[in-house]
Amino acid sequence: MNEIIKSIYTAVLSGDMTTTQEQVEQAVGSGLTPADILQEGLISAMTEVGRRFEEGEYYVPEMLIAARAMKAGLTILKPLLAASDVQPLGKVILGTVKGDLHDIGKNLVSMMLEGAGFEIIDLGVDVPPDKFVEAVKSGGIDVLGMSALLTTTMPLMKTTIDALVAAQLRDQVKVIVGGAPVTQSYADDIGADGYAPDASRAASLAKSFVG
Image 1 (tube, rainbow, N blue to C red):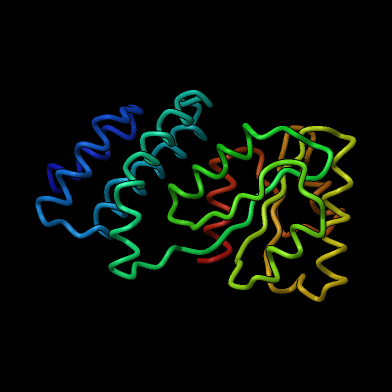
Image 2 (cartoon, helix red, strand yellow):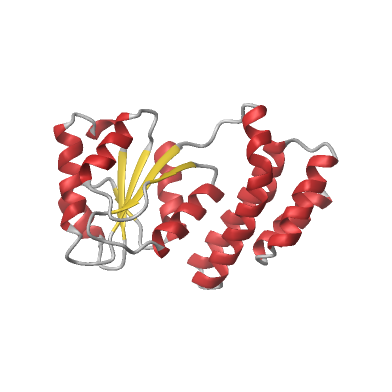
């Protein structure tokens, strides 16, 4: 592994935002391609962060600061990636369902997905079914991710899936759900394509759908 790439990888793993930015700038200046910096530096580091989280070596705070460091590096790369026509892994819509204002989990999922190479459309919190449907209608969406932290708002996940069916869009997008009260059996019951108990596994699940 190139020394600068290695230092980016290490900086992301340790959540060092400043060093990540500096090393990404240095990598760009040294002539490394934006695609290589993204793939070998940022994405590979976030893959390792996900592995450590699933193994119990990292917890949410470590994952969060690593994701922030990755995002800082990605900010520098984004215009260069666009200019060199590097395509994202896929496009994901995220939102917390109507009636629910919790966004920490959703934001972490967003950062992990971005770290995996996806383009994210974040609809925010308190998102009604019709807003999810309109976003899918815009086209080119691979995955729709819904979050709920309250048992009272969980039924809105099924309402949204039903709205996608009614709009004849259901087969165009994979639907994944998550949040503290959500379970695999609930995801199965409402007709979701997948369930993720945490941000790391949400990224793995989304990758399995586009891979």
